[in-house]
Image 1 (tube, rainbow, N blue to C red):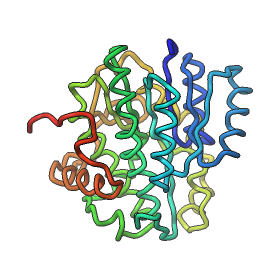
Image 2 (cartoon, rainbow, N blue to C red):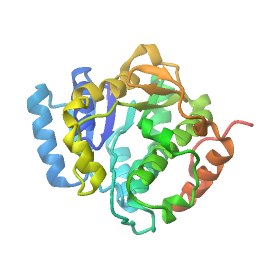
Image 3 (tube, rainbow, N blue to C red):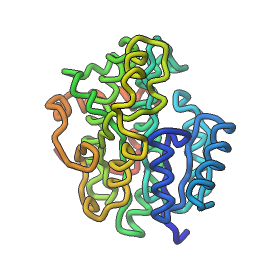
Length: 292
């Protein structure tokens, strides 16, 4: 394809949907990743009507299901010969403790391990695109909530609590992963950055717990999804950040993440534990990490 291709997870609503619409307006072909076929079809129809563009495609896969992620990633690799932008946007805040088939708490599965696995599975397309077109980008949609997690413990992925504690830990894990993947991919031309989109009025606050109930009572103070999408769109498309990698942004402003995000020992522990949990072979990652 001559048209650049972007994939956005959690594209059915909120920041993901607004990001997809913005990418279409920037003349990208956009793959809308949604949880179900029903939501994917509905989202594609709504996005096409709102933007006037039919440069869309859909993927339906539950991000708590690692086998489903693998199958969907293979469809993307079979369907496209390039991937210019991967936006790992989907996120949840579960206030009950639910675990997936691998025994991982589902807030962690969606917010962190799904981006970890999907990024690895799509690296062949991303690195091929960077080689052919000069660059490719991974944008991880994080949260300043990571600052509330004073340290990261890899055991919390399967043994930790749900709710806000798990959410903060998952977002810290995402920043640690961003830094480590950026370091490992530096020779490839694939950049990896993380963005806090602001506090946004999205479906993440739809849960039955007290925290979500309180958040819904003050939603009028939150950013709109369109405002929340400004940061991801900036990192996905702007020439200003063409060669920037391993950085953390608050909306469109580069800033420093929490001190815990620079813990190299925690990052290494997280990396190896994550490889085991999603059953990835280090020899299949298509790149050699640079010397320490």
